[in-house]
Length: 289
Image (spheres, rainbow, N blue to C red):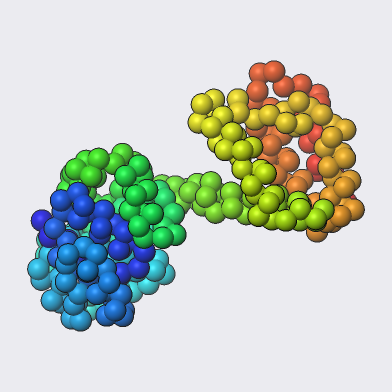
């Protein structure tokens, strides 16, 4: 089974290396810039092509690993130029979109899928290492789905099977726990900065707390891992938080209250929670300034 890539960015390159390391045959890369394709090809012992048809005619599976917003147009262009033939397997690796963005290829007899790794691709070599423990999702045609499953089984990765309708919530989940976590961290560090604590030093100081919290979630689940003033129903502490934030960083108070309300909802799930105190906290956090 020969595999090719259109798109030689971080995702396409890292996944190509990962496949190659596990014994898969990477035939080559086509990219917007030849230099990118050559770099990825060198790392995967494959070829870089300047004619996409030279890639497609030699492969069984084509991964489109371009930027998400051009995947559909790349596919449509391949169909319009008659580069695709019946029986080819087309796969994109966007978390946000379903395989439906490849529907034009399906019309000419191809099988279409989305395959998404639940990880961030910030740097190629680190991403290759991280892929060892990455969980994937598969969504697409029932026919040939076993080909995609067998790839992941050979790689040794766990995976979810999704429907096209489930893809949106799946990706929103990934964004919340990854991207929004970064935003939450930045917000917390900005509060440190407002009292003169350097961001890098603040992060180092907070890291054991962050790491401990993640480990608690892993061990206990989110509900039982929640500690702190809201879980304790400590009304005075939350009132003081809002007071000092309003005085020092008033523009950030709304965000604090919004996250606080979601935390109250989580605390309500704890069997030991004081419902009256939590209701009081909810009312305080809902107050308009």
